[in-house]
Length: 321
Image 1 (cartoon, rainbow, N blue to C red):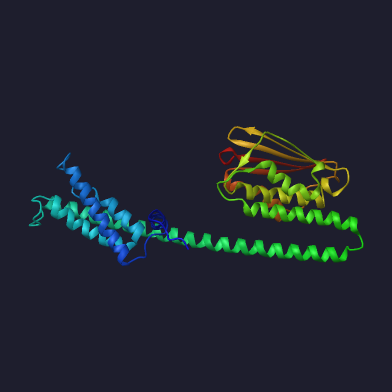
Image 2 (cartoon, rainbow, N blue to C red):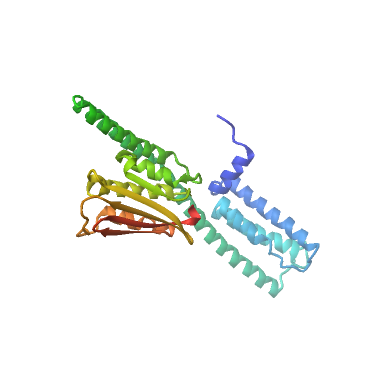
């Protein structure tokens, strides 16, 4: 196993911090105070009458974020002593404090402990978010594994049951392989890497035959979490089209087009040639998923149950494209 580099350890400290109340955390607090003192001495060369504790506020903040509340408290106490000793007249004596000096020290303590309280809460929140993200990744990986196992089981059952119907089996097997490929494609897509809009559409529609689907629009790459969310929407639209809409019969088709529209990419899904469409009596889970999934991305989706076929109008944020 490779030994972590100094840069890697520093990155881990910044992201996860040091163990609270550990020798490393307390040493880091001392280092922060020393750095703040050196910076204050450097400021002395330009502005000898500057505020004595000016450079110690960042030291307390950084010590708390990296080392926790105890490290921040140690940094605040050491900062008060260092500032009093080196920068409060008469310097390097700590003989007495004037009323103005006492007020200045009191303000420093009030501000420092407010910083410690806020920074420590923020640090704990980040830790909790890291734990939730790690748990989410484990759950998603487990669900992906279970879905693959179930798909493999279905594949084996159908192959056995349809062994006497080769044509039907070849058609069903092709669709199952396409569904599996779409799941693998989305699972492998990493945040920060662009995914082409046409790739998402083709992957989700491949099980139903791309010959019945037309696409028109300039090349668009989607980044971040948006490709995964859009794939869920397209999957739901395609599934509904296969059950009740344009893909449920022989003559139906789907037209998908997109264009730039200000700060958004306007995408329209139009079905035609299928059974007559009537608005549902109640909102289903699929309808809610389609119309609400893009809200968190400052986008939108709207379903129109036209008699000639379902129409879905989406607006994707250009900032993610």
